[in-house]
Each structure stands twice: as structure tokens, then as C-alpha cells.
Length: 243
Ligand code: IPE
Ligand code: IPE
Ligand code: MG
Image (cartoon, rainbow, N blue to C red; front, side):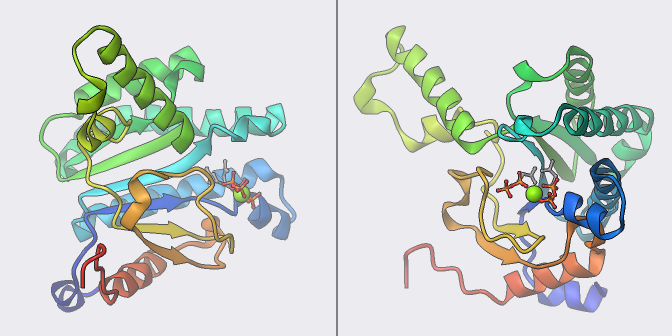
């Protein structure tokens, strides 16, 4: 995007991306599904860097859902290995990422993830938490319903402990107990691959999000496509129920 264009538009603060279509892309190319995920992971890196350049505050990438465990074990382990590769690379590039002002955060239920991955996430999160201009949120073993269930349990614990009255439970209590606590709601949600659904992605936070759908398969997604989505978003009239 040119600087001239960038000045004209209003940038979304938070963009959610459902990185879908890796398997179909691989099939098209006559490759194994895991090769599609590998190609998708490469595109994820490119889009992260580009979003940081544009000055986006927060990007959430949906990489693996709570429902994706249904897939064949070899596919699941290939995806986990790609996640591992990314985390260890991010650790190696700590200084570079810090210079870019990149903060890496995880959202989802970490309890079901392999221990070494959880340790890497903890380390990265604690080290990149200070000064930042972009937050990269990685949604792995993430499900919007699971997230809400987790929030409800946290709130119920406070009620049980007598710290909160049920009548006083507020929207803030719910927001504050989501994995995304402290982040703005997504202004724009991008779903490539020709599917028109959320598939359990940020279901609470998406109440007033703008959606951008496309037939492009994620491994074919380019920085130009991100530009297109942002420009379309910028031309939308968001009313939030008002006039
Ligand atoms: C998205 O691509 C990656 C994950 C859900 C882990 P898919 O693997 O869902 O690709 P398609 O939808 O089968 O093409
Ligand atoms: C959504 O894609 C999850 C991710 C991209 C991580 P799916 O491929 O799992 O979604 P469905 O099954 O088509 O709804
Ligand atoms: Mg899919």
C-alpha cells in the first residue's frame, strides 16, 4: 500500500485471520496436506511482517481450532511441528522482533498442548511483553465456545468465593476473563478459502466485526490481498446500532 493510500484510509486496530484452505491448496498442487500447512505458515510470516509495517496494532491468526483434533494424527503432529518451528524461530529472532516492536501472545487452551510448546509460549510471552507496537496473537487449540466456558468458570469461582455477586456480573467481567483480555475487539475478520463461517473463531468478540471473505486459498494469500481487505473495510459504514 502506498503511503498516500495509507493516509487516506482508516486502519483497523485489530484484524482476525482464519488461515483456511491449506489442505485444498496442497491437493491442487498434488502435494500432501502437511505441505499445504507448511506453505500457509510461510504466508503467515509474510503477513505478520507486512501488518507490522502498516502499523496495525493487533493481528489474531487462527491456526488450530479446538475441533481440529479430529484430524488424522499425522496431520495434527505436522501442524504442531510447524508451531514449534515458528516459536523457536521467534525465540532466535527475539532481538529482531523487539526492534520491530512485535509482541507475541498465545490465545487458546494451552493445557492440551505438548509441554515443550507450552514452555516456549510462556518464555516468548514473558520476554516480548514490554514495549510493542504490534501484538501477534496466535490462536492454537482455540475455540470461542471453550473460551466462553473458561470465562464462565472463572467468574463462577469469584461468586463462590463471595468476591462477586451474581447480579453484579458485568460485560467487563466476561471480557476480562476471555483469552483476549486487554485487546480491542477485532474490527475486521478475514476468511479466505471460500467458506462463509466463523468456525468458532472469536464468537463473542466478533459482535460488531466487519467480515471480508475471499475464494483465495490461504497459501496463495498475498500482501495485496490484505491491502484489498483493509481498503474495503475502510469504505464500510460501521454504525454499532446507532444511526
Ligand atoms: C487451515 O487449512 C488450517 C487448519 C485448520 C489447521 P485446512 O487444513 O482447513 O485446509 P482445507 O480447509 O482442508 O483446505
Ligand atoms: C477453521 O478452519 C480453523 C482454522 C483455520 C484454524 P476449519 O477448516 O477447521 O473450519 P471448517 O471445518 O471448514 O469449519
Ligand atoms: Mg479448512
